Each structure stands twice: as C-alpha cells, then as structure tokens.
Image (cartoon, rainbow, N blue to C red):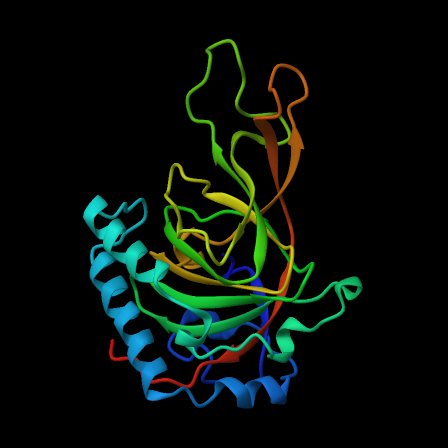
Length: 267
C-alpha cells in the first residue's frame, strides 16, 4: 500500500511521529472518528502487540529484496487470518466508511507502528474508494481484509521474455504480467506479495466499505530510492490474451485521511 508519495491529512503530530512519513502535509480531522479509535481496550492493545511481535521477528533481517522464510510466512499469515475487525479496535459504524460513493471518497490510513524493517497499518475504504495502481519496490507485503469486499488487480514486472519481444517502450513503459484480477473479502486468506512476484504492483477498489490490514517490510524510503510510484496501464491487445499490460509511471499525488491509533507498542 502507498505511504511515501501520498498525502495524509491529520492534525495529530503523533500519527507518525517516529517515521519519515511525518513530513507529509496534514489537513482536517474527523473528530468523531478520532474519538472512536483513540482509546483501544486492553484486549485490542494485546492483539496489536502480538501481531507486531510476530511481524518484528519475521522482518528482523529485512532489507530491499528480502523474502521471509516459508515457515515465517505461514506463521504470520496464520495469525492475520485469525483476526477480526474488532480485534484491532475498529468498528464498521465509523464515519470513514459512510462517504458518498459519488463524491470520490478518500481512504483513511491508520498507523500502528513502524520500525527500520517494517510498517504496520490499516486502510479503511468507503464504498467505491480506490488506491490506484502502485508498486512496492524491494518489499514483501502481507494484506488481510477484515471488513467488506475489495477488487484487487495486480501485476508483476516481466523480467525474462522471448528474445524477439521487447519489455520496455521508448516512453518508459514496462511490460508486466497480470497476477490477480478478483474480488476478495473478509473470509479470504491473507494475500502476500513479494519483491519479484505475487503481484508487487496492485490497485485496490472497494466494492463495499472495507478494511485491509497491512504488514510490510522494509518500509518505503525515498531517500534510499524506494518511494511509492503510481502507474497507468494499457492492456497488450495483440498476442497478450489480456494477461499482459504496459505500465507507465505517472506523476500522481494520492491523498488519504489519517488517524492515529493511540497505543504504546513495545518496539
């Protein structure tokens, strides 16, 4: 999911105080929602701490291109698969889910924790909200839907192809292969993408109000050349069978609302 390269609107300096993300410009706060999520219960705190502890161990050695061990992937996905929305202190009645689908509704970003090796957060979507096609350079990302349903379309870069075919265009567009084009919901298993496969570039579109929990590592770091980039896509219409597309990087600022989860994570 996008963090760097995005604008997050919030008045709370504690949202991402320990992260480079706090350089984002902030705007207004929906105070009714802020109150709803500002006082997590002991059970919520314990659950979030548990997920963070597992994630910290999985991503302990994360550097760009890092892929966790299969046993670690299984451990974290099993833990995420068992989660329900209320386990992380959220509620389906929150105002961030009630925007008019005709008004280009914004996604709401909720920050739990970030370290040099991982980022732990949730994204709340009103119906019809979209996070446009974007990448995760050198990253592994675990995504679990906790509410509603979402259409996911994802691609991976084509790095080896027939020698007679081109994988780059003069305008900078690169050839990518379709990985996923399906609807997922809260009953779906955790989706895992990797630096080179699994759908490292994806677009999320909310079919209904929904929440996706993300654990990713290593985090975006623009200063290290790993910012979040956005893309337009054009399906390869000759010989591609709809499985290939040209992806062209485009300048784009993606705006989200932002709210802090006031919780003390033991790092």
